[in-house]
Amino acid sequence: MQTTYVSEFTARYIDLAQREVADERVVAAGALSRAGAMSNTMLARFSGIASRIINLSNKRTSGGLPQNVVVAVTATRVLFFGYKLKGAAPVVTELALTLLRSNVRAVATPGRLATAVEFQLADGTSFQLDSNCGDGQYRSLNDGLLLALGASVGV
Image (cartoon, rainbow, N blue to C red; front, side, top):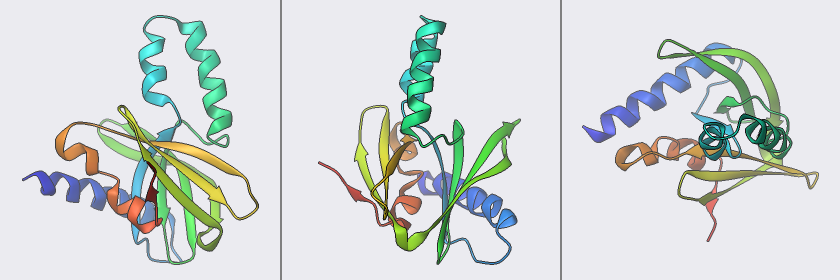
């Protein structure tokens, strides 16, 4: 039963990305958020101004990407799509970034609220997104994406 939900989630995001990528097969996809999104959401309950300031910093850390992205991996590319939820269904709003897969290295570092995924680029730059963690089965929702990216787990 646990793997059923994870499989459904994975299939939904692969299908969503595949509709946007006509020229290659999407081999993995998942939903990531801007770095610090979970802690910033908690901070917003106490201080809207502090939350806005932290959000600007998080946007820089995340390479200017939208708050929520579907990351799709093909044989040759890594694509980042901004998305919003319409009801319970994700809807792509924009293609935010396309990178050559050979120019991207991903390093995942687990944390309490999220697994930080650092995307290290061949030109020496990097940016970070978060794979938000839940409990139990939900912790593995983006494992297929991280595996496809060759993410090594940091210590």
